[in-house]
View 1 (cartoon, rainbow, N blue to C red):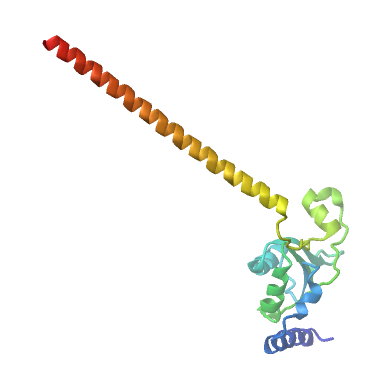
View 2: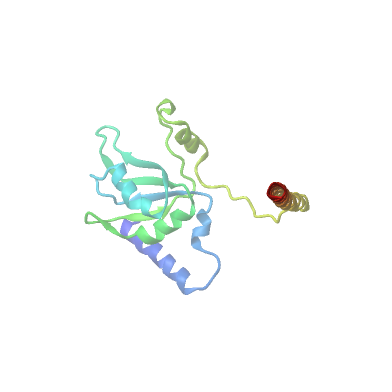
Amino acid sequence: MNPMTNVKNVIKLSERELASNSKSSWHDQYKDSAWIFIGGLPYDLTEGDVICVFSQYGEIVNINLVRDKATGKSRGFAFICYEDQRSTILAVDNLNGIKILGRTIRVDHCEQYKAPNADMSKVDEVTAAIRQTGCAPTVEPIRPPEEADNTVRVKQEVDKIVKQEKRVKEKKKKHKEKSKSKKKKRDKKSDTDSSDSS
């Protein structure tokens, strides 16, 4: 299919989704992948250039700018992995069909992209882990706190309050003792002064 037709189809999908007030989105099909495809890139762009453009919608954790094996020149398409899958939706909706250096680019989701197996000895641990497992976030369902957790939290809060009250009482007690000792000293001093003057 013509790349421009693909761009127009993605735009039509987004417009149709906005027009219908449905709760589900066509993006939901790709919720398990944080990878996007970028086609139609100018051939002289580097990985850094692509990251500069696409990082405005999220943190990029992996990029594969496909290059010709013989010449090392870009083949005009790339794959990007975002740290958060929600960034892929923003990138597809906002960057699909834009022009970069006079070329219209196509941005779309990748459902099951795996990064190529490069020489793993040359990559750091994080990149190696991402290449093996992918980088789509695993979302844990939100559960209400259990009774035991609530009891522990409440007990901790009560303990803090009790400790604070004890400290306040001790400070008041020390202050009273100081006041009493000062009063006794004044009384003794006044007694000695009165006995000296008589």
